[in-house]
Image 1 (cartoon, one colour):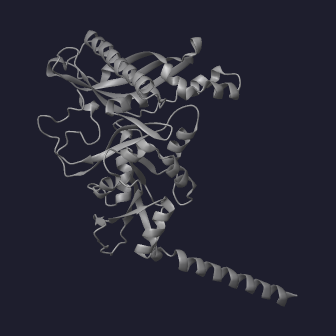
Image 2 (image 1 turned 90 degrees about the vertical axis):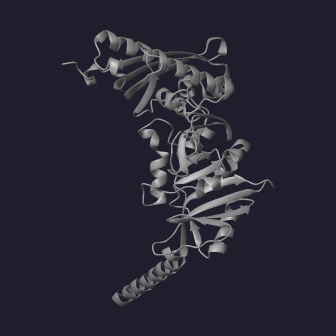
Image 3 (image 1 turned 45 degrees about the vertical axis):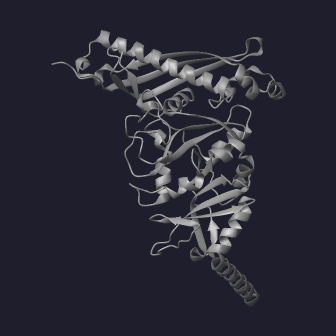
Length: 409
């Protein structure tokens, strides 16, 4: 009896070992090519062009060809194909390795392909068990392949880490909205709001002359590829790409991105440059530490009436020398001016999304759904189409913390 149990144990152990070594031989690290990012473009022929940024193993010099380009730690390979899966198979046959998407940090769509609709690609990506739902979705104002080719880490050792830092700059600036694949797909398929993504492009470092920064009146109003930064050619993420359904319908600059984050209660902190109420040629920099937005939706005569009460806590971090010693009356002037200024650009933002884009990227639908007794009533109302009929009442109150100001002694 003991001998039989021992024999069964040996057989099971042998089978487990064979299974382990068999799988190891197929999926060994040496047999995999790790994708850092991938890009989607549409060719003139209408076919899909896929680009893969592949990490170069340590100690490898990589490879090059007429259809690829190389940076310090990665190489770009592109393929013209009909579908994502067929493109992956074609690249696998060329590399002699299996592409692995489990470390992909960014999925980049060109504006051209995004305007045509990216639903079919999103469903395929979400169904791929290798792709993490936390990877970022970026809409490039230029060709996606060109975007990947110009991704050159400057302050990071690895391209994968570079994408993480670049796409999450909203945590310190508010100039874009950090959007993951999971969040984008959920917004694209639900009934409460529309999808949006990080807006990116390539900064070629030439917008530094007299026309620099003409995309906006203040530093906050710039957009990707138009910032007045003197640097080597590299990618940047600044602004928000607005979708209706699975199609790109517009883009927002840095100031409008801040407005969206405030409305959604997603703003962590940001520095806002506003015109000075004392001198028309000067600016005051406000550091926004905290913001809270309370929104309500009513439906008089069937049209949405949306009201938002916004409380903002801020402190002054730079201003004209003539006003560095501030009294309480001057602080009140700054608070009132800042409140009106922020109210103005947030009001412009919500009307732009409603009337021009017809896209509820602020997800006001989550407040409107409470007005309907049943789910069928909500679906029949069709919020995403009725959002274009909305009217808004925005109220902003800015509290400037005077204890941070320089005190005249």
